[in-house]
Amino acid sequence: MSARTRTAAILLAAASLLAGCAGDSSVERGLDRAHAGIQQSLDGSRIEERLFTAKVDGIIDVQVDTFAGDVVIRGARDTGGEVRLTATVVGRQGRDREEEAEKSLADVGLQAELRRGGDVPTLVVKGTPRAQEPWANRTDLEIEVPELRRVRVHTREGKVFVFENRGGADIRTTDGEIRVLTPWAISEDVTLITRGRDIVFRAFNGTCGRFDVDCVNGEVKARVESGDWRILDPRNDKDTLVATLGTCGNRMLMRNVDAKVIIAIVANPMDHGTFFPSP
Image (tube, rainbow, N blue to C red; front, side, top):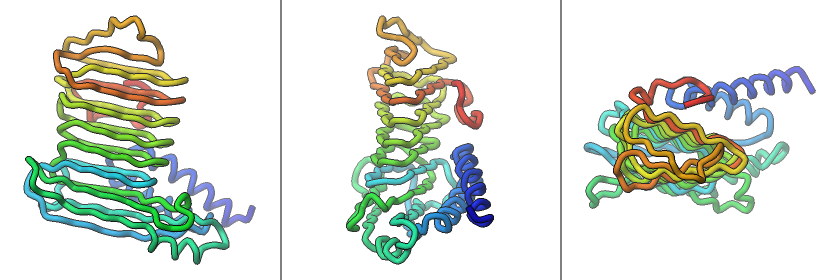
């Protein structure tokens, strides 16, 4: 391995580690971009950045369906009354195929629109692969909104981080960590499904619902600071949690394989450590 390649590999490892530390910070964004640049030098991948903005007045829902990639959604952001979407389209055809990787970017479809007409507007984002080797492409999305209500994200091979939502969440991915961190009490349905990486759900005291949590070869950790928390179901063990919190009828469904589910219903849900070793 050449000195240049060895240095790039070290920087890549450091960027990957640090980028997973603080998903709600600008530090992570800078590290993600550094990671992408280093990745290009190592494997010949190519990237293209696409931007979308729309004026919005008040709270919105977000709905994302994409074939692969990370999705980070941040509410409570000072965006000047706008929805802001930054999409990073990636082609990873491999070294010595940089030209094909570059051409593949144009074959990745990305549609974004702010739909009005419901009780609140909905940002709808759809990523579609049209390249001959769709497995070699991905679309990483970063969305910032002034006020965030409900979230629906379906992707694969990517992390999904959601910050400061006020309503329910339906998040499904594979091989990616899920984080839902909100200073609001949640009393709507929540579905969080992944495999191989942790699920972290942190919400404010007053959150309620029927918890149905199962990990295959994993572990469930939970901390509830207040409320009527009933965990009497005989199925409960290290990797299963069937419980009720409060009197709400909404369902809190969480599924994972080979990793943890970490739940914290606390007074300071946004005040958290780096790696979430415990609730």
